[in-house]
Every structure is written in C-alpha cells, then in structure tokens.
Length: 236
Image (cartoon, rainbow, N blue to C red; front, side, top):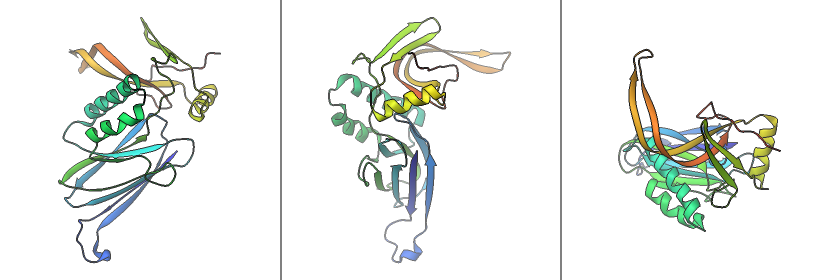
C-alpha cells in the first residue's frame, strides 16, 4: 500500500500566508513493485508550487515520483520510458547508476529517497501554465531477467509463455504467497509496436487493430491486469 500527499500553493511572492490559495489531496492506493500510476494535474498556473510526498504504508515498496508535461500523449511517453528502463536492466551492470540520466530526460522533476526512510518528497514550481501529469511508481526493481536466466520466455501459438524463478526477497515471497492464495493470477505487459495493421469491422462498427510485430519490454504479474486473457500460476 502507498500513501500519496499532493499539495499546491499559489504563485510565489504572495505576502501573507493566509492569502495563499491552495489545496492538499491525500491518496491511498495499492501499488505493486514495477507498477506506476498517473494523476492529471489540470490548469496549473505559472508560479504555482507543488509539494508531493509518497511513502509505503505496507510491504517493501520503494516509492518514486515525477512530474511530466502533456506535450506528448502519456501512453506514448510511458511506453518509451519503460522501454528505456528495460534496456537499462539488460545492458547495464549497474542499472541504478544509469537510471538518473533516463529520469532526467523524461521528467521535469523527480525524487526517489529524499523523504524519511525510503519515502519520496518532491517540490516543483510550475514554469508554464497548462496541464501536468504526476507519475507515482516504484524505484527500479526486477523479480527476474532473461539475461540472468531467471526469466525464460517461450513463444507459442497461443501467446508468449514464461517461467520465472522468484528471488528469496520480500517482494518475491509476497508474490509467491499471493499466487498461491489466488489473490493474483493474471499479467500485464508492455511492448514497443514495430508493425501493425488497422481495419474496420462493419458488424461491430469499430476499428480493429492487429499487431504484426512487437518488441516485448516487460511482464508484470498483477491483480488488475491490462489483458484479462492472461494467466499466472505457481508450478511446483
């Protein structure tokens, strides 16, 4: 579980504290390692000051938060961001050291461990008026990697099958328990689309998208999957 506190004060320079317009929003949500959630911050003004704090209230989540603008569609940006993160995991022996450079490219401001313990604290002064996006996620982590041999993929006729050797860590033990209890039994994944085809179904009266080629970036075992047809289970 996580606790996210987001507050805003009006433009800097107001003389009296009681004259500062602002708000505070408290968000409690469930976030698993490797997942992220986006919150839209609408109609911010130049000079508005944001104060954001995120901390774990249970489990071993290491919170990380960041601010993005909305000049590029969020889905497109997050797909590229996750792709760069996965390349870090694959190509760098010390991926955490390279993570700062990637975050600086995508976020206007971000924080990982400035708060007490592993909490994330962030302050940001809005430069240009408009909409912004707050990304709440977890610090870099992985339960398995193909390069380490702990994650094995098998492309079959009905989809991509995987075998994961869970680590003896708190995150690994938590996932194993949730799988055995049946609390978690499905997956989400992200991919870079390399080739696609669009058609129109006249019966359903809806566009139909067919993915012809894609580069798989990551697989996550989650309680609320993006793809309900997926399955995940413990193999003894």
